[in-house]
Length: 366
View 1: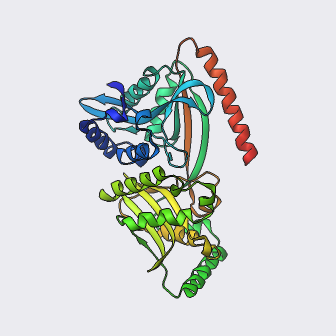
View 2: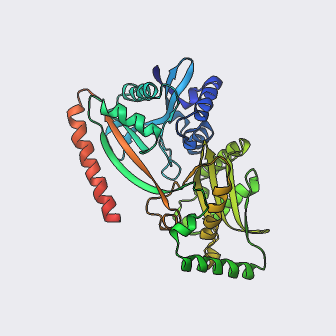
């Protein structure tokens, strides 16, 4: 097994084929590390020349892969290699793509490539799932590491796991709250003088632009945290949606009447999972909770989607709305692996101090 680093701007057609093939047989799906997502995001952010892929190769195929960046990480004054998430709004999961065969050897080669490929003091693996098959392999590797890795950060976020019966809402909301949502929906239908329904508009360019516009019209638009805030971000979203739609792996759900979208949601499909990317709603109708109405419909869409066993909210851990609606949780962890050399004695105390400061800031905000 051989590990190496490849710049995004140096990828060949053969490389792209190997990357897609690996994503299709990965131990755990991660659409945010697939070429249809990574390349579109790097182009949108203008970072094609700043991103590399760490790759493990064996028997002529790619066996593991993850995008990486170099430089400062979380303002720590030491050179680092870290998972490339591109932007805090769009880097939603950091689990490497790892093949089902020779997974331990492949992941070990991948990590070695990141530690030896640049003049850095450490490698940071951000937002890796902590309870899946990749985590099991990773923990085995880390237990045998010469230098004890640092568990820098952990957090949980909402997710859905398939059940035999679609009783997801009954598990999380009281009967009183469910009645209130039904009342709001009825009143909204009366106000608009039309039937309300949720439809999938994947593949419609107008629907993609509609979500961009709907998101920009709300409070997020004023804060500048929307796709429309920068042309490159909107261009990334359009390209990414087009890529996944062409493969039949895009959900672009629209809730409203036949001629008016009140809430929209973008999900990506990979393996046996759905991954939420964006949701937006018309704040003019916030009294009727259109965003929550769409999420309620999403529970039914999820249960009826064949060959899907889970859905990752990809939401902030403190997102009260989704935490209340979705009964399950997914844990993510960030590991830091130190590199040997002259700076080794300095690296550990600096990382531990940075972790303590980060934990203090999180407690203060919560």
